[in-house]
Length: 160
Image (cartoon, rainbow, N blue to C red; front, side):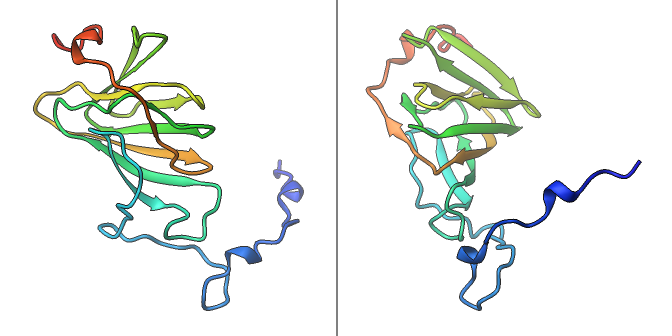
């Protein structure tokens, strides 16, 4: 049985994505040429591969986030942005909840969705290896840093 592709017919105008050459085409950001001018949150360093800063994208941020061994981000949220993440390598923890008393742990191959306006802390559980994840956010890489909490207030952080 053939799939019905009729619902995928072009019905919009993508001319706003025209490149300086006048054509609408995929835009490649080569490895090593990602945009480092993006908001971060302390120990979570972000670079963008697809963003409004260096591609025609207007409603998408897609980048790589790294945490050095043992480091964690400061307390933050991402405003109205929905966030999706994928752990490329390492072991991650995200603290959340009223007093950051809850957490979820992830490892290589795990996916995560972080709802808008949810304060959280992103951590690298490993004391010797970096943590790297791919992150996508819509509409943009919104980072609102908040008053931080001390390490000793994070359950199971110091004795991980």
